[in-house]
Image (cartoon, rainbow, N blue to C red):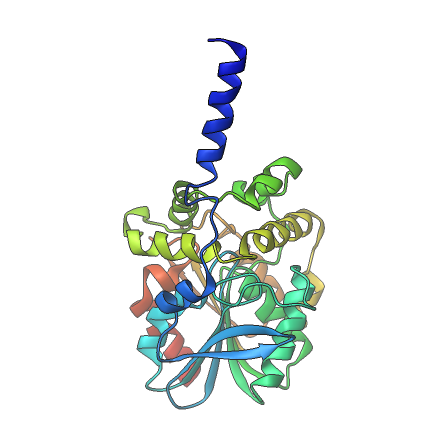
Length: 308
């Protein structure tokens, strides 16, 4: 083929590619129509509309999702626990319907600062706190800093101890790949990442993939994802929190899927060594998000722990 024609064909392919779903952003209003519901609330923080849901009656239980996720990861728990607890779950900055929140960096410390602001805005005094993955990291750090506020702590495959980061985090942390990921998030890649988080990938429905993918296409969320993954990649190998984890003074329920490919189940032993008041439950067939894979079973375990 003539070089000029070849260049025209290649350029045409690129521009056509930019019209594909992986490159587009989905308007916030369109996403809210699909992913907000009658329990959704929006709290203004630093000019941003922070999406959260509040359901049920009883002692408050605050739920924190992991990176690249949303409050919808807790749907099963909310359904099972709202008869006994006041369930509060929030889309963290750079995720879900919330998107970026000015004044809070997309780092672990920035997310912790946001959590303090959110807890204060919700006027939560004493409450139960649960978190998965990055949300687990936020939860145990908050409990160390505020033992007077956290009654009990539930950690689901929490980030913490040094590890080899998951492949997707390592790839997105590369300058070129990260630059591409800020603008391109094809559905097939998101589907692969979600399936890798499940112990049984066959449990991942098309609607679950759609949710993860479409919320990532909210304006600002892809850039936030890159920043969060880079911060996690930097800290994963060079940060040993053992002494800080030993400062956890509240009762802890540690939950882990034995087929977790994101945070090693072997870390359970480290938690046993460093936390005195600890209960552990592992799930043989589950992966990194057992509350999604086994919502009824895991919610039952949580209810028993909180009611002890």
